[in-house]
Length: 107
Image (cartoon, rainbow, N blue to C red; front, top):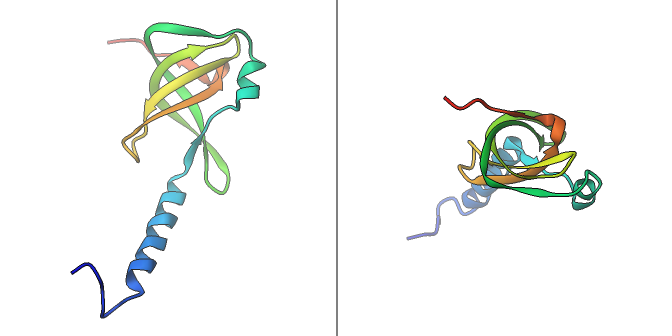
């Protein structure tokens, strides 16, 4: 068990299909360390602050998506946002420019 003697190349084809599907989902793009440094002195939240943030995603191109997340730290011009990626179901941490973030109202 574990090998496909009848269709030996099928596993490789499926792996390629999976990689292509994942590439189509895109990956979040964070600001670089240098970009964050240029935005000013940093501060950290005592507790996470609910926010909506426009996060750039890279495919073959970048596409902004609005996500619900939490501001974890910030500078004068940038915010570190933590959010649950709905595709991978994993937490993502990205730095975005401050004007891409708005505070959410809590119910």
